[in-house]
Amino acid sequence: MPIGAGIGIANDPGGAGIGVAVFWVVVGEVLVALGAWFFCRATLARIEANEVGLVVVNYTRTVRLAWDQIESFEVGGGYFGIAARLRDGHVLTLNAIQKANAATWTGTKTRAVWVVAELNALRAQHA
Image (cartoon, rainbow, N blue to C red; front, side):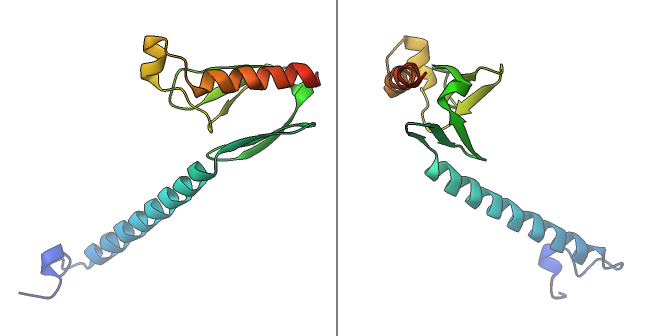
């Protein structure tokens, strides 16, 4: 049995199998790197409030908002986090605080509800 036959590249007379194998190795490495990057970002997700506004560290980016840019905060429905409704009409999801879908379905109050109330109070205080 030729070396490499177990993975199907030695029996390829054109040699294209090696290129395909290398392609899938590279794809695998890229996916592992992206997964590691996303995991690291997810563990760093946070909301920092100060006198000037908020620093929002989300899964994919960090955003700084002044208090006067924010219209209100709302509890979203689960997976992605609470929402900051901005005065320009945009909605920014704050990934650091999420409400479980089960809590939404049952009407259970969670930490997300408390955080939204606190953020709305801070926004009113600095407006």
